[in-house]
Length: 77
Image (cartoon, rainbow, N blue to C red; front, side):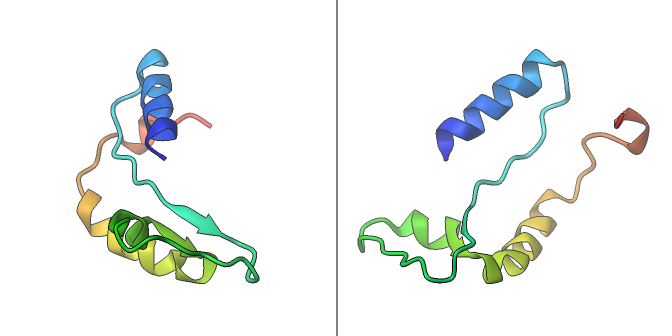
């Protein structure tokens, strides 16, 4: 996950966008997938989840990033 985060940060800088907060998560969408982690890999507990837990994770992340980085006028679709 850190590698993808770093690549996204580099892309953002290369395209001269403002630095944005980036949260990393791994979400399994297949309900039959088995998720296992060793007991010493505690970071995975908070970053790896099933799709049904994603709304709660987003809700938990949202208050940590309440400051506006860009405004609607800067967003071009």
